[in-house]
Length: 258
Image (cartoon, rainbow, N blue to C red; front, side, top):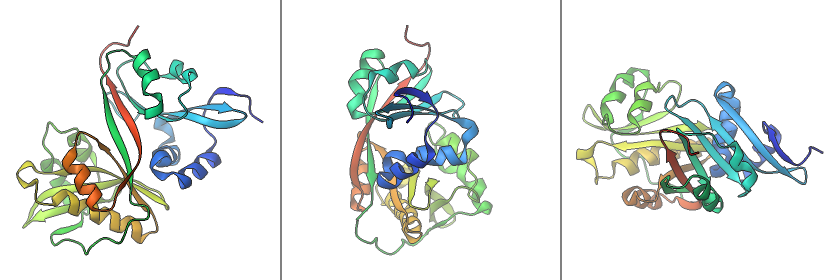
């Protein structure tokens, strides 16, 4: 039995079992462990020889490290959090610990949502299709330069990471992609609609298209959404997504807290 306390790394077999039981909670960690081990680091917390929590450090963001805190709200994990600049995605149960350790850092509540057990989706909307490598040049123009999705879509290759788009004639007006495509769970990300097309059901249509593709392969569709984004929440709920947990997004720029 492994000793209790913090240890580097994570038990891959345990993580896969956890991800199958709670895909929205663990899918990113399992995907990063397998697909991007050179950009991923873990710290696990064991109690009674069993993993009770872990930190996933994602080093694929050039601006700052992103840390997913998963599991128990144990103060022992605080010492492993990185200095600023960093982004921390923290479970609701650990919010008070992080707020006390990082005073003044704003936190945005974020919902984890899943379509597990939801009814079948309606037929695909006209004008929505999966993008191919020939469409790659359209992606940088669909997302405004000020959007947090802009840089990601500039780099994204539809031949590697599946992307669906909504078209008005030949014009790409909305996008969504699957950032995780495990056999049993997909994570939908980067849902975006051109401002002049918002309120017309575009985001709902491209999200539904990703869901259909996931479910055709036997995977459950999951996603994360900021609670302040009421239109997106309504669109996802109409598609049968239900909230399965809450996290808080702490974004700390500049110099580390002393």
